[in-house]
Length: 493
Image (cartoon, rainbow, N blue to C red; front, side, top):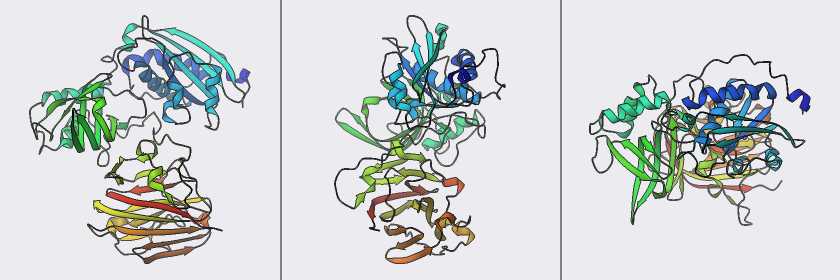
């Protein structure tokens, strides 16, 4: 840990100017950038966690303080400071909740997170806009400094903070109201809207930068819904898969524009949805972004870093009960339907399984291909080395360990098998036995491969890397799979 004297450097020294990136919240960009520059001078190469609290009783009518936390984190990262939002980590997400000033006790939540400094933004919207920046050092716990900045009233305006790309997207959607875009599919409306800002989606349903926990939704943001139940009075409406754009948003409801839905069918229509009406399913929000421009904020998922606590004393662990897609999905939309875990069609979709592993274990699962031609994969840990089993990769042609000696199954490593296992309409019974230096795979009772060797030869391909290297994970590429059973049995050593 650096000394306090090294932390607080001379105010007149300025960091190197960083390449400009479009602001998330335009009206906040200039004033928060000025504050971030001063803060960055003090922090140099330290790892920072940023939390935000609204201290006004009334607030701004929209979560402006959360927007400020996002923008401030982005400004720090543009200045080469390793800053993350406290809200994006379950170990520190409580820091954003209280409506009281930050104190030294708050920094204790940084323990075991790898973060050195807590930056607290105390945001006041009314009667005057004001920002107080406070800093606390972890290990040893110590208050460092604080500064208060008066802000113009316009900084809390939702309209003025709507990103320019969002404005263009929503203006297009409003222009085509009551018209059919393309063949009338919900995704086609957003495909055309993104053309207005010279960008496009990536993969199947990745519409821009995915918004993280407690990031304010704004007009022009795109919502992807998967297997959502929406309750209106006594009627529950099922929204199986739908893409829509936000027209207006308040703390209690969101007005969206969409097509291929009730009551007007395949024309663009407006609908007001109450947040209280959403009772189940997955909703992921995206902000239009100029691919391949670098996204300044780090990946916001997963937010879980501590293993799930499972009830019961049985030696067989039901892994499906450990998974919460909101916390554990790394890429793509994952959701439960009828107690079965489903992947969405997305390139290299991944979801972690938050369970601490024994040295040796058996994984058993029932998996069915629903749609799409590509692979199902699952991450394993062998003698401390993470690897991935790939089944029916390369358009259903090859199976094996990915990677072994730096080679994928398609590159003919020692575990490659050229056989198609997933048959339409049929569940596969998969069993994988993992011991130190030994991995075997059986599918529908038949041996697929039996590998022995130095586990240091095992790695995970760059497209399938996950944050937690000591956990299991599931993966699906451009294919929807349904996992109806997933268990782990420890092996006595």
